[in-house]
Length: 313
Image 1 (cartoon, one colour):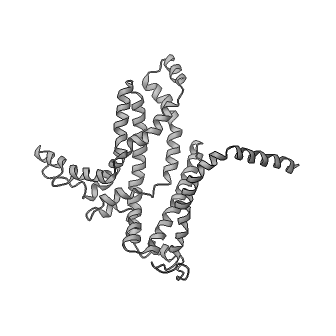
Image 2: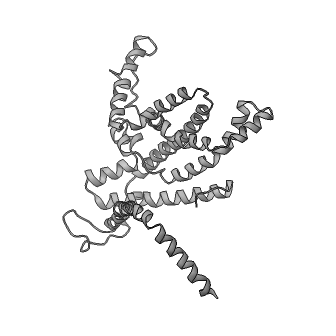
Image 3: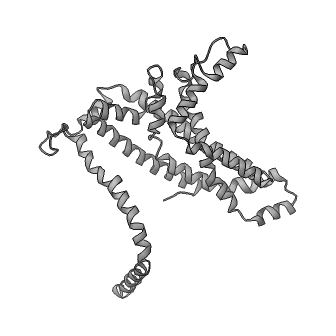
């Protein structure tokens, strides 16, 4: 009885796959790229468990087990400020980026002049295509303590007595990095929310208007609740990247005076892996970061599913 049902299902599935064979062939290059550049390099994780030395073979190397993992927490005190800096800036960036994009999409939706709204969206989207090296050059020209244009203007106007070292003072590091990220990704992050607003049926707004709801009421009771599922999905997806930082951004803006507040896990791995050539230790830190990120996304997804009934898996 079971086999009589199972075989037709298998045949039906095989027939459907055969009809869609060209779609699978189109998908094949992406799958191969994903396998080659994301899954195949996982074999290199073995470096974290052996006494690897460049130029020598992997397998005859001495097996060290979890020595590199334990040394990160016991022999080195770096993990305290590394976890602090990474979580503070990445969680702050996540909240700021999603929050500003959410509010920006709501306000942009209320702009009645379509040309003006598209112009604003284009202007805010442009920084996404600007590289971090250009952003660093602009920041240095504007905020340098001695020769920055903004500091010189404020000093000449008598607002401040001397220039503020925004790029070098550690107390400005976190807020400045978060602000730069908001400025760069505002237009890009808002596209998803704008698309979600466009998918809301006009019948909802027309019915609310007939019931006497003004623009604020329609925004509060229709637009915002319709965007909440999108916000939750983005929050769950981005929670897995909390320990991943933009390497170019932090590599450019980290200097000798602010490194204690700017050094994150990705910069730390780069320093020990490619500068100090301590590949096993750098690989071990990278593995820990990967597993913690996996635990985070599973936990946030479970919390979201229990609290709101919405999740991505």
